[in-house]
Length: 298
Image 1 (cartoon, rainbow, N blue to C red):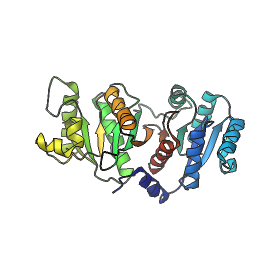
Image 2 (cartoon, one colour):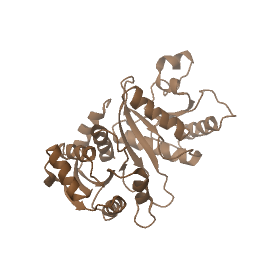
Image 3 (cartoon, rainbow, N blue to C red):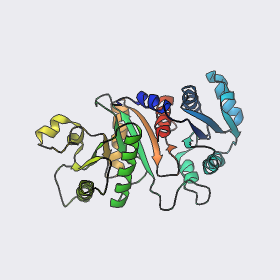
Image 4 (cartoon, one colour):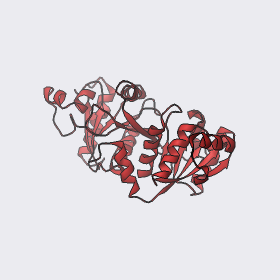
């Protein structure tokens, strides 16, 4: 069983190598992470951005810029658009966010003609946590994109969580649909959605995972809490994945894990034509490396 994000890197090494394109890759964390991924033989890489700045950063980090294909584009939105063009031209398999703002990165992905969104696509943020206080990797969504997913969107997000789990070697993931309580409260729409999704899974309408809900967070990830509350079913106390009811709960969970518990994380945007690495400009190069590895596994 894969329990560490560094094991995902070993998994990806056994798969065909992908080509990554990094949009506006002018910052040291992006270049350092991409360089590490290239050295680990996970990806080949194209950097789109200000060529002079890229050369300067490589020199500061003692990195040979000759190992990258560099496309000069000093404007961040144009750099993102050119990066999407490479994906659409089948010249790259993974998109990565560099030093540009998230809104410009998303604008390029969402562009009707040059973007990466199939018709009626549901875009969702998928995060994979290596949490020091949990016994295995934990996949969570949506932490950054959809403010309040409806039932149909939650069904799609579940499929993304399942696909991610399968890609990193969890073939029968246990997924908890998170609400404020493990009780079936008809007055709480999140509980109603959770019950419907859980029943759909029971009847084979959602396959590839063991799914249960509504479940509170403590019941989903803490075996003792599950026993005390007499929750059974296989998911309680041992979840591999968490589906959150809204962006507030998912985002707060993400930041609590990373800030209070110093969890390592890899994250990407699902639902586009290819996996899109979506990490903060302030994220470490290690976080970005893990995000590249997860995207390459997909």
